[in-house]
Amino acid sequence: MKKIAIIGAGPTGIYTLYSLFKHGEPLAVSVFEQSDEAGVGMPYSDEDNSRLMLANIASIEIPPIFRTYLDWLKEQSAEHLARYRVEHASLHDRKFLPRILLGEYFRDQFLELVKQAKQKGFEITVRETCRVTDLEATTEGVRIWAEEKPLQEVYDLAVIATGHVWPDESESTRTFFPSPWSGLMEAKIGACSVGIMGTSLSGIDAAMAVAVQHGRFIEADEQQVRFELDKQSEPLKIVLMSRSGILPEADFYCPLPYEPLSIATENIIEKEIAKGSDGLLDRVFRLMVEELALADPAWSERIALRALNPQSFHDAIFAPRHQNDPFEWAEANLEEVERNKRDKRTIAWRYTILRLHEVVQEIVPHLSEEDGKRFHDSLARVFIDNYAAIPSESIRRLLALHKAGVISIQALGPDYELEVKEERTVIYAQGEKHEFNVYIDARGQKALKTKDLPFPSLRKQLLSTGDDIPDVSKDYTLLAPEAVRGRIAFGALPWLMHDQPFVQGLVVCAEMGEAMAKAIFEMDLRPRRRLYFMEL
Image (cartoon, rainbow, N blue to C red; front, side):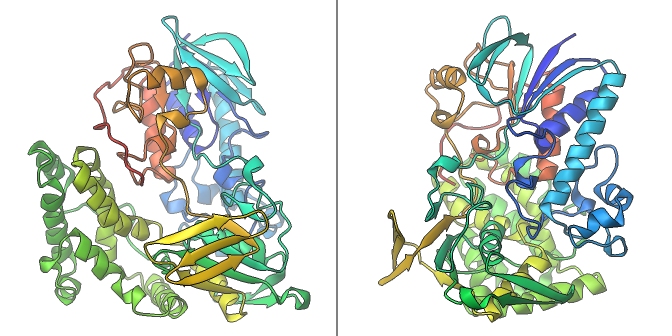
């Protein structure tokens, strides 16, 4: 029986195990999870989230394991759902629900998966509260250290499915949080000035975590929300900050699964890649232009699409939000989105950009360094803003905080200085000084290099190649050096973001899990990327 180690039992680890299970060949699988409950994952754990925090993915998009998320929800008792202010009558496959509830679904499916795998002859060992501290590929197989101690087992394949990597909680202080998941959920934040870097859903969630310590959201119905601030908490002022000072848009209605593209198809993009890196970005952008013009000719004419290049396209997409007050824009966008959902109306240009992001991402490892930077500064920001649209309920709560005088937004511009001091944080931007009693960095996951790997022996092996980032094959197994080749499947998201800037989300987790599971039976050792590091 082949021995497999899966390090990390969040969604990527679960989908990997599920793919092994579906293949049918009994295996000896050891699952290592550093938290006390395998099968949940940090983004959905009750330790790192409050019940107010919504997952920005609904059942219709979540790859099912044994049953869909919606079917599982319908099986839960009314009393259990009521803990999350959810009613059976309100459930549908496009509804956004609390992250913690989604974590319960994954935990339940993981336990069912372990049970059924054992019935099929798999030998499954689940090690909870067990942190893998090192691993090393040898000629005999992969050796693993857990809690600094070497294990006796040697594995044929080790799957690194550790997910996001956030700063350690020990880096937090009572005035500084290097991420919203570095102790913020348990911290007591006073009624003071709070600065949050980042205006995406992570930043908004961080604001919610602070605000609910000083008041409550009162929801008359799903469409009307207000925030009631405690009298003694009137000094609370939260500022969301970013270079642009714009807010994300609300999640929009569109057909799922995605309708096929007509012009910028996967085959056509591959042909453009085969022509070489010289001019690749501009050639693919022209394909995008034709795809968008076909889908939404009136909008394309309005923004003079055919006259644009990647950077001016970026500017045109964001111009309406820059020209309006962010909260007024958010309110208008929310009304539009909700009207379109009721009418099942799709805004063609938005839907086309959404479908383009995955196929266009394939050019990233083939771009020159100059064009890689151009892509990052233009199209990547458009794509991320588009697919990271957030639940309407999150927008409503944000607007409620603004109307209560609790929250504002500050555009910092392209250049600003940040000083994190012991008692406060000071930001200098555009000739102004901003001081905060508490500062939270909510800018999201950063791309990491080989030197950042938390496994000393593997880190040493990979650094011996002289590459800044791990050399990963099509099935995510490491390619170099020879000792690790084909022995370790590397599904750790922060190290994959260099050539896959959009490698996030449950659909990607499922695709990665399937690819890594196949590696135990038939490896695809074609390289994925050119090796250069870009700070994304």
